[in-house]
Length: 397
Image (cartoon, rainbow, N blue to C red):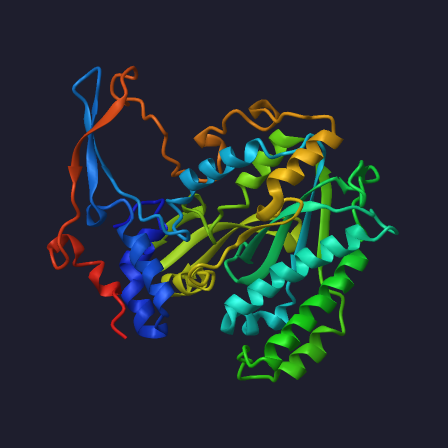
């Protein structure tokens, strides 16, 4: 009998073989299955921690550190946000979302590295080009983009979230150009420029023989279908300063397809989880899927090895970020960034992941001491009983 609140690893452990027998999986998906199942178990080894005040001891097993694992994103997110805190500017921020048409979903699943890369590139080039136009903002902007490939129901829904400071650097670099209050750039123009750039990129990739079109339709037919309609570009209302931005980014940058907190039950081969129905005002609902279907949907969102889903553009681009940030602060009369301008710290409970590990764990027994590592636990050898369940996920193809 399973717990009332299962974890994704438990679903994978109990029904992974059934999924593989029915659907199979590529090497990256198999690696993700294997990592999630083994995360924070004896299979990866660990250590023993002892309190420096009392006799309390506990065993802590190692994390898999796979970027698709629901358990491993909290610490990674906290470290990333700490690095970003001093880079935020004391201005309002806008949030824009660029969405790929549903008809292009099969093409994206068959060519994820190319299509997702084009999605990020087209969205970025659109923002930079329209913002630089004197008819709109007439400035060089900077922003962060995050790729998501899922909807709340775990179905395929590729889209890019862009978080943009409200303004930019004038062409001559002598002043900060502010946006109109409550308005950034016209979404209809963004939509059409985005569509044109993405379609042009697809045609170049096809001409270079780098695309594999879906079996059901030719690329020409797909493009003819999608260019007839406006593409969805959504601009949310601007939100507050750096502290609000950090909390906002915590919900987007290191998110995986579904967190363990959303799972409700695992019984009789079915998984129940919470989801928000945005088609009906964001109402909270419960969805129940066969465990094999749950795994299939989860693995739709496993990205190619080495694919960067978080990218920076404009004056936030890595190659000249330091110099551009210094210029932005000078133009905004903020010569020195302080931690207080961002957030001194973001406690684990404020993150959208329930599995964030504290940096300096306090003893849960006495509440006063600190836990220190006193013994390392090596992982068992392959073939031992501890790994019998996970060895099934090794790629044998």
